[in-house]
Amino acid sequence: MSYILTTQCADDVGLIAKITGLCHQHNLNITRNNEFVDKDAKRFFMRTELTGEPQSNFLPLLREILPADAKVALHNGTKTKVVLLATKEAHCLGGVLLKQFEQALNIEVQAVIANYPILEPLAKGLNVPFHVIPHEGLTRSEHDQQVGDLIASYNPDIIGLAKYMRILSPEFVQRFEGKIINIHHSFLPAFIGAKPYHQAFERGVKIIGATAHFVNNELDEGPIILQDVTPVTHAETAKMMANMGKDVEKTVFCKALQLASEHKLFINGNKTVVFS
Image (cartoon, rainbow, N blue to C red; front, side, top):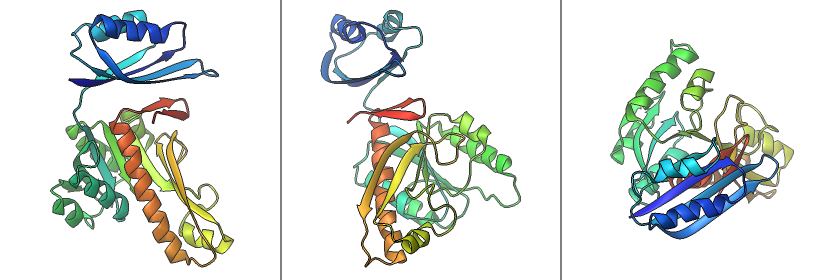
């Protein structure tokens, strides 16, 4: 059997030796290892790929020899469970669902939840359950409560905001803390509001891009996971730039979900540690 061991804790002397030593005692073979120390925060992060069969007391023993704040987890090869939230735009949702259909992502999309029915044919065409929870006549908190309850019934590992164009309530963010991944264009905070690509076109920008990040209560300012850009010339119209932006958003969103599914992401304050 293959496993991935993830460890994060306060930095200390001999952590790698303690972890690898215990693996050796349990006849676990380390096939790949990545570690990082944030010297400013004095935090230690490690991702270890293992083969073998760990005993039931492996994690309890590991916690005993690590600092008291240690967070350790042992992941097997099962696919990461994902619920996607969407509104009207199809590119990010379609990109993820197509890659799942091609078995190019290590995820299982359990369901799509949207506040409009527009994208239902896309999800159902790829045999993914689709739920509509309209927001009309509901407060933000009431709508988030209904959406959150439906999400909780699936118990996903990750919630992906596939261009879900609603501001989440603090209660919703707290309920699923550390599990929500969002995607947006990288013009923020320069071009805020409607038609950002038109604003960028008027300013003559030379690159456009996208940012995937974990969600917190600061709008579009959560810990960044991944970013990418594509060059723009004077020949591109605002519509062409928007289409280029959609392609970058789709790619970055899919990559972020893949990193999460491979347990390569660690939240480190308002930053992330991302192992390759």
